[in-house]
Amino acid sequence: MIYGYCRISTKKQSLKRQELNILSRYENAKIIKEVFTGRKIERKEFNKLLSIINKGDTIVFDEISRMSRDSQDGYKLYMELLEKGINLVFLKEQHCNTDTFKDKLKSIDIDLIEENNNSDVLANDIKKAFYKFQVNNLKYDIEQAFKSAEHEVNFLSMRTKEGLKAVKEKNKLIEQGIIKGDIKQIGTKKGDTFNIKKKQPCKDKIIELSKDFNGTLKDCDIIKILGIARNTYYKYKNEIKKRN
Image 1: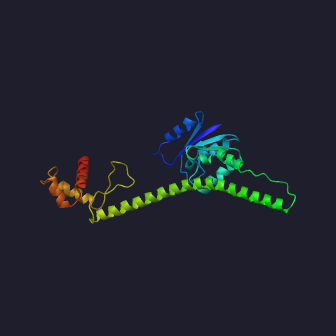
Image 2: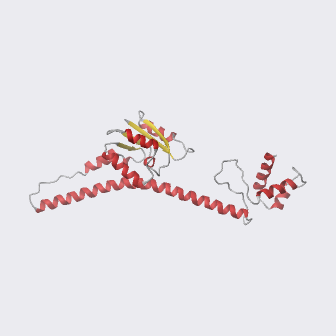
Image 3: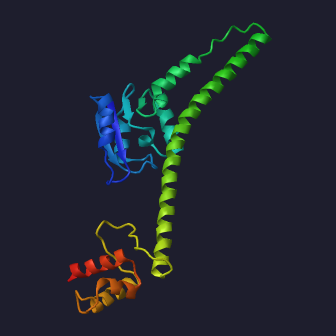
């Protein structure tokens, strides 16, 4: 059996690209889909897949990060499945495919000689040490691929946190009147509104002064009086109109 495993971390993402990539290479693959973080190897659909696969079966991933974004768990599972005779295919990291790994192992296979004297024993020990070194290098390449996937998600997480922190700090300066600009909405959908300390008083003043509501002043005059950005003023004004 050939299985294609597609995973995304959130419902906002799409599985379509992964599915198409797999089916373009393995048109008979049975597609398994899942929405779950790659930081955890224990995933409902993935666990179901691991419970039904047999020796000689193949699991195809669009990339190695779809299998795991945890380097230790990913590497450990890779080696376990390799030992069980399960074929693993990574479309974007083909050097990590289990068939490629096994071919490289065969290429460094050692030919031991009959040990008749100490020099023969030494020669075999050197060959064994070299073989072990080469095998460890191959395993290191696989481990590094999973580490790259882990570093990628850690980097993205760090950048997201830094971005949110920067937005919060900027919003604080805007609220304090130290700098001008529009308050950025964090974690809200497009069109959502929210209140800050200066927002409601500004709206009250707009209603009081604007000729479009209870006052006699033009927009440009009110903007100067309130000392807020033009875009912010019109956003508040539109919100007032919608509310009324």
